[in-house]
Amino acid sequence: MKNRIKVQDIFAPEGFLSADALLPAVASLSDRYTSRESSSVTYETANMLMEAVLYCIQECLGESEHVMTSDAMPEPLVLYEKGYEAVLAKVKSANALYEELIKDFTDYGCRNYGDTVLKGMPAFFLKYDARFCPQDHIITLDYPLLAGDLELCGVDQIHDYLHKLLMEKRFLGHFDKAAVSGLLSELCPEYGELYLDNICRPVLSRAAECLILDKPLTDLRLSNEEKRELQEYFTGMDREKIRDQKRALAVLLAKKTGVEEEYFRAAF
Amino acid sequence: MDIYALIWKEKEKKELGTLLACNEKTQRFGLCLTEEQARELVICRNNSLKKYQRVEFGSGILDKLIYVFCDSPYIDGGSYAETLEKLQDVFYAFKNETQDKVTDDEILNFMKEQFDSVCCGDIEYLGGTCLERFSRAVRDGYRGYEKSQGMGEYEQFSEEERWDADLYHEVLAELFW
Image (cartoon, rainbow over all chains, first blue to last red; front, side, top):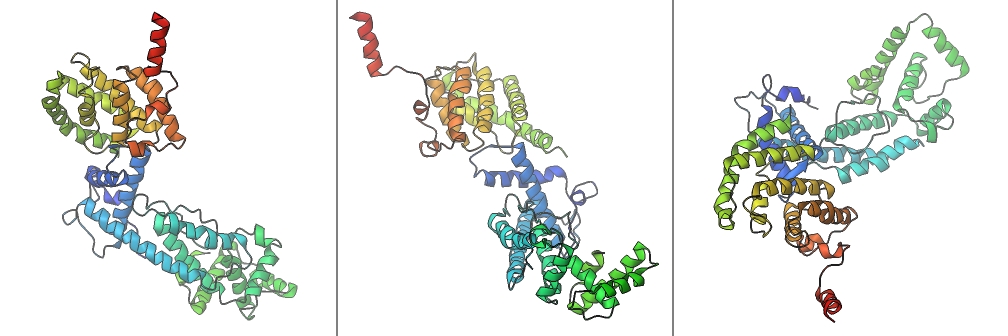
């Protein structure tokens, strides 16, 4: 995924464009928004359209293979249109990720996870407005990722969310469904309704503990004896050291399960 | 970045010329704007836009307003500029009150029709009564104006008894028989 260009990078004097250069693009979008039937719009609408133009321009510049200089910079309206096409392509790509995610999907009995994926996400694809409000991803994404990016918005947020959710699904898929449900139940007996955290995190943590104890990875249960053994292992280590150990094991697990290492590294 | 300040700066350049060009068409109705009046009108329009928190990107509503109202029997050369200032303010208020559901043309048609008939040129009555009732209906879901383009709409919202043939004959009978 390419890095997003920040708004301040777009504007002069350091950036590519002057703010008033964007006005023709915003005016053109406003004409489209009102179907040329209204000569004025509210501040709220104007702000929304300005953000839409900026979002698409960021999308276009973020997707560019070459760094553009102010000399080679196309008109903002052209950048906006190219960015809009990039947004549409990203929606399509997000849709493909979603199709893959819901194939053989299981929520492990966790309602928050299931509702976010099966009830919330379709609303994005139904209601997302790529033309006039691409910066709004509409849904709240109640299920937290292991390492989400809260700064993203619009289809960028949804694409990133689905991409990471799919990685997490693939990782969880390496464990027995009953083992994951059992672990969640161990953490929170009424986890079905009350567990609002990420599922991957405790599984990753427990799997790392299994690695330390040299137990099979698919068995996520620890006996009291094993828990004591683990406690002894960590005795004398400070919090940072324990985190480093878990991070190293998480990376190892990522390699074993085919998940991007960086993602699991960022989780601890 | 103040997007609104940028828009206004850009617009001001073109607008005076457009308003003064309207004089060619309105002169035959005895209506003409001086450059000073045109400038004053633009300032008033900008104040109204700020007051109602709205932005105009294109050519704006003033020239349309002039063309629609220039043949009104209730506007004369002496009150022309002042009337336009008040009408444009009512126009933007109405855009907000109808939550942008009514197009510019539909609003202008409605305003002109009432201004020339039930309001008899009274802008206070137009804004405070006719538009207030109509916008309330629009907010409540009324959409009949889409078909009529804002024409012939007010009678159904009017709460006053007005002169019609029956009432006229009734009053005549009371007075003379």
